[in-house]
Image 1 (cartoon, one colour):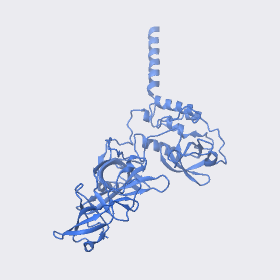
Image 2 (cartoon, rainbow, N blue to C red):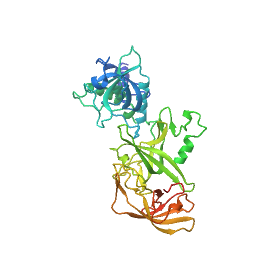
Image 3 (cartoon, rainbow, N blue to C red):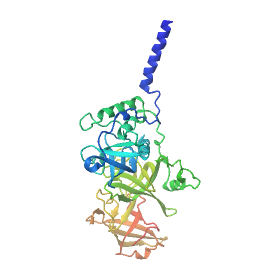
Image 4 (tube, helix red, strand yellow):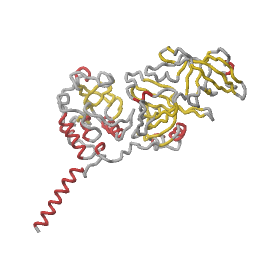
Length: 438
């Protein structure tokens, strides 16, 4: 009998050890804070300023992603803080597994916080490598009777980031972050698990921009903010990964100091002479996706997102070195949409130069039969700010005879126009009726 009892106890001990190793009681939906509770905010923050004193009170201005948020200081200054010691999966410019989940985790905690304190990594706040965000620890509490918790640490403990610090004087809380990472790993939480992420789409769905707008604004969608929940989950700020063909018709570079690139992806329907546009977010000029070129036709793959009330595609994967990447945005045709305008913008990374030319000089009228006007013209490529190539290129243009600007097409005229080169490298440009000729 003693042997049986001993065997049972041994089996229970083994089961307990195995359970501890595989975290059989771990709940991925639970917010863990056992390690986080052991770290306390010891610095005085009352009457202090984060920028000048290295610590101070703040309120949430706008959540960004899992490891970056915008805060308003007591002085009224709005700053962006990059959480020190962590690096959550991407959820904006790039979309990675657990990225949206991490972003929602951070957002939910900060929106429920009663009080927030920012602690810098030095006596005065320091910028990150981009120079647009301050590095720091974010402390919060939900009531005045609570102790402050370090959100950076809690993000690691809940398996949304590794401990990216090293055991040096630059990381005074390193031992806590190491324990938090170990706990998340043992509990197999999120990035440490093999679980599926409900907010991450792996395989893209083929869909035109026209179809997207028809579906996203379906009037039958009275819930989820009136949006099609299969395309976009408003509560979780998570969208479907889609694939479509579009040419880059315009580019906006933000002037708020971050220098983010947002292209306009456009589809043209020659049967109806209509255009369908959606923003394509490409992050910073240091990212490969910012090297997309205006006028090129791409097969775009990215996730649906809503930014400041505008629909956009984010998380695109692109490599300008010609390497093949999984689910990557790729060039389908170079020089698909050309601009002929001597006053066109020039972008320093040469996105505009490849398919942008100065005004067309009409050199010869070839035909006025068959309902179209066909003419030859020359134009110089834009190569810099108000700088053009020495030699002009020759093109053949076709425009409907009923075009409102047809009377302007005479030999020697200088024209501003836009058109499509449907046949790659053919030099044959089609000008739709909807495109102005000036």
